[in-house]
Image 1 (cartoon, rainbow, N blue to C red):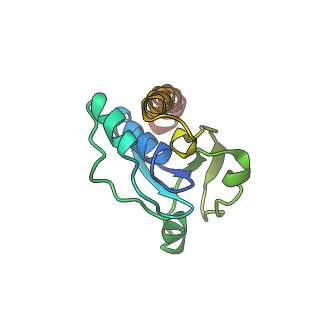
Image 2 (image 1 turned 90 degrees about the vertical axis):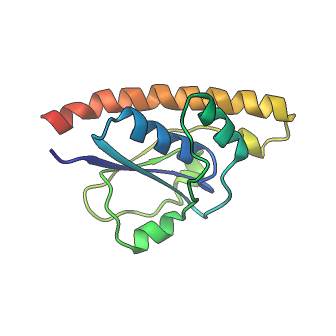
Length: 147
């Protein structure tokens, strides 16, 4: 049984893509291999670490990566899922192989001028919405694995 490789991409690999990678690797129960990267490797958001720890997932040791490093290494993915606005998603390179690209637009509240408690609440909302989206993704694609 071949695992489905998924790459989650956002601007700096500091928030959304890191949370999505953790969710898919956790919820996918070994049927999926998730990675994440940014258009540029930034800094892991402390808010992402906090909200994922609240649900029992520790991402504090995750390094940030650049999508172009993965591309130049020739890494192959079944899916590349961008988690940013459509204009930013267009910056994602075309990966060789049988890659399906899609965009799940999610905002990045850490870049907004909001009080920290409000940013934290917004990051929690994104964490929960990502989990729901990934659960649907798993249901849809698990048939492909088992099929």
